[in-house]
Length: 62
Image (cartoon, rainbow, N blue to C red; front, side, top):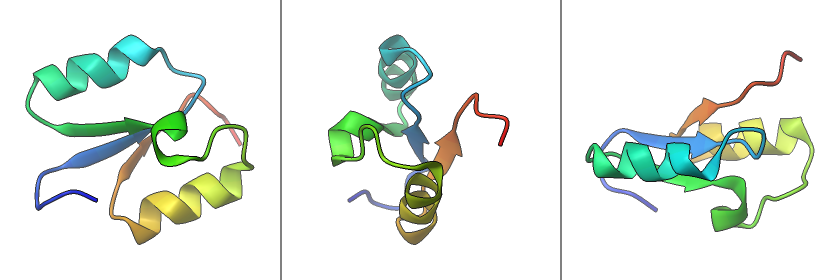
């Protein structure tokens, strides 16, 4: 999915512009829709992020 760069997975409750800004800064960033996870449960998202060594960015409090 990505090389050794720091990479982020951005939850759908954050703006698309955040992904674009992170990419402009030279990092790797994906939205849930980019990786086929739009609308899935939080646990699935967290597991995907962990398995793919992605930093999960979300506004969820649970």
